[in-house]
Length: 242
Image 1 (spheres, rainbow, N blue to C red):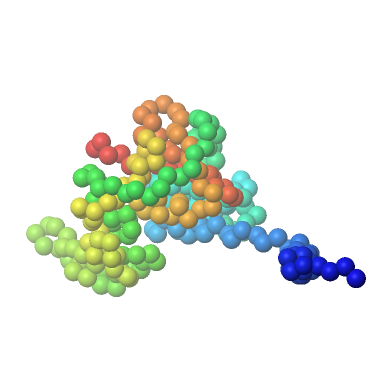
Image 2: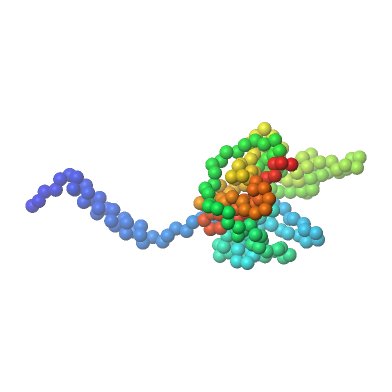
């Protein structure tokens, strides 16, 4: 009988264990990627357009896409991902904006996080300048109005929410003030400066890439295009010249 050495024995044993394992793995259904969470991109209030109300507090359907927007960022995924089951009346076609179709070069990886301080942008990027983290509630003292009474023709700010109209968990980044003066708040993405808030929520998207803006006007003020596995979007940069 032929003898096998120790190395050959280990190799033979390993193949006996590995091959069945590979067969089992190959028979498993492919895992679907986790759904894109659109809630972070929704507004937390109702916008008024003349006499009409636009409620962007939840995703909505339009022309085969599910959109989420807060007025500064717009993100869309295919409607078959079942995150938005409602339409918004009186809303123009979001996909008709020319920036969705304008190609301006290669897609680039999202840059590493390097927030900077800017004297013209002390608005807290974590709580959006409200002093409170999402999900926020209306202040129980002023019912979300922000003011409590009048004095000398001027409205007095609510002593509970300090005029923000919100209540909930106080933001640790600005200690509930809504302002982050002296702290980094801005992320640079190519020519565009964006709020750290959008850098935080966009960075969660899988395989996130961006493209330089294209169109008339200064590049640093044009909408920034981004895309990811499952969708794409537009983001308005900060205007730090004012």
